[in-house]
Image (cartoon, rainbow, N blue to C red; front, side, top):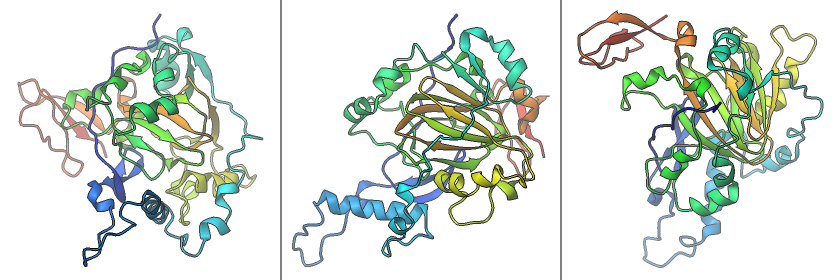
Amino acid sequence: MPCSAGAPETCTETGKCTQKIGASPAKDVLECAPAERLQPKPPENGEPSSEIDDPAVLRDKRIRAAKRAARSELSVSKGDWRRHNLAASNILTTEGIVDRAPRVHCQDLTPAQFAERFERPRQPVVITGATDSWSAHANWRPEVLAERYRDHKFKVGSRSFPGTFGDRSTSKSMLKDYTVPHFFAEDLFQHVGKKKRPPFRWVVVGPPRSGSGLHIDPLATSAWNALVHGHKRWALFPPGTPKELLLPREPGIEREAVSWFGKVYPRTLAPEWPAARPMDIIQGPGEIVYVPNGWWHAVLNLDLTVAVTQNFASTSNFEHSPFISVGRVLGQSAYGWSTPATGASNSKSSDIMFCKIY
């Protein structure tokens, strides 16, 4: 029995990134600016500057800017990054971590069983075997991506590297490299239309020590993350775990996965920790981690990783969703989207209005 159903839709795409401006689902992102903003200005006297065409100079400037954006409390010029020995810490070791997450092969689980055992009760699970037929395992190897998409522009995020894909001729082939597992085929957000639906799908590529800081996915969506290459470390906490415990007001904690795992995670194992213990997962290639809505989760890349992830809402978790169907509003077939402040539909004509639950 196949474990996938349907090919994903295309999504939007932007260019090179230089500064933080907002958030994608669960991730701060950087503004994608024209390339000319990244270039040093030539001297006013018209004399050529060796820096303008020096790739090493441009690279160093971009690295310094990225460091300041990610960890403003660390001085680049004073050498704080080296003094704290961040790049040589043992944060990547998995020694002592006990992975107790349930693992189920896709052929041993029907969509109905998945909904009953995991989706409705909001229980995380690792699904195996569902990516075995994906051509992404071959086509998304780092060296293949570097060669095939070397001139392609992807959005760069401050935690890992979320990028949209599939809307240009150079990357449309990526849509054929994987299919949505049939456990997650239901997609209520499709009813709001392509223009109104929020961002929901990313290819994520990240080196060791990158990742996603602790967060809950927005709009009460659940998520699945399929790892194609590398290994990821996850820490999950159930809904209701106090935010003030998980995200104390300390520099770097909320933004960087490596800081959270280094500073906060050890506290969650201490005898005096007053809340739920973390569910630890070491995700390997070919495994899909299902994160139910409302669960706190942080992710640390243990090596160079390539994955595809998608947020979704379905009827099985609809009772926990911020939107509920309140019946027919107008007699034409379109769908509306409620505004958080008023609950009013922004659709001119709709079959169903989705109203915010507060």
